[in-house]
Length: 429
Image (cartoon, rainbow, N blue to C red):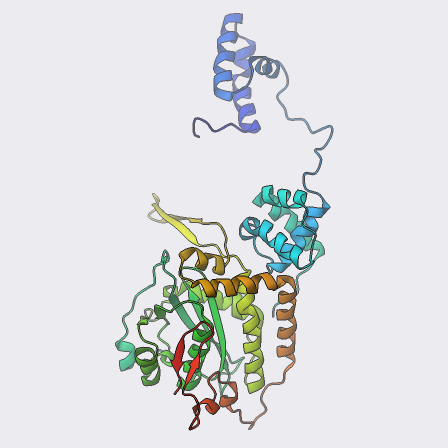
């Protein structure tokens, strides 16, 4: 305990109980010296110490309970804000209460009075956690629904891990999530996901199958929407990422991107994207089978909404410090300290990597969007997707109907390049 740190009530009472008997049998002079010492250690007045040592030190229940600091107005605001943030934990929710309350007030979801904003700014994480736990009882949430030999292209890519403390945006972990259901036979939908290690920025695209054509098209769709440059892609050892076509794509068409890969059978080499596979893909889609053109296109429309919601409105916490302490039993204790929760957009803005016009466009988009209605729309589109029928036996699916850079762009006389949303241009095949 530091010199300026105050003892709790229980700690003071423990000290007083230990010296009470000695105090009561001491002489007047000894009692005076003891009171001086206790006043210096406990920070209490001598008269208060004298009364306590001559009385019963047992804790008594309150005759009158304390009034509530935060009333129904704060609880209603917490309920609306928590729903808008998709029920974040209290640690991620607390630093973002005030600005989200002001944002929701602009969209008519709640009334942000100065008194409410002041209380939301001073409420503690523990109080937020207790209130949300109690509110959750009455407001139930809606349910979310053998090794391969390395080919020559894979051997050309070095194995490494992107450091967890990477500060520069643009280093992406990449993975494919399979939506095959109980059977992996035939053609089915995959989710291509990219997570920026430094900011938590997330990108998802649905592809029908895992051929070079649809995987390359998925990367094109992501690059068209990404507001900053890709410096590195870091997938696992999936052969879908290592072939002549994607090698040409990254080396010739999208130049300057470093390629690396994780070690075989080491999922911890891609911890960020593996975690988001669970929270941003499986938590919504589960393990059902998706295998039609219509399901692929509807899923991409859902991911378009999730792109706005999770990058502009969902705060994420980033690991700031990790301390490993060896223990006597040969094991070790790992202590982690996280920074203040911020949205990926805010983290990206703090790096200075956003162009002014891009930042203004994203900021304008966030101001115009009602996150509560956007979250509800994500739920409706998910329900619509789950009602779509799967493919029937023998039914053929045309993957060209799912492509971002469709075949009509490549006809003779047509433009052979696509201008991306944030000013970059990539030639089409």
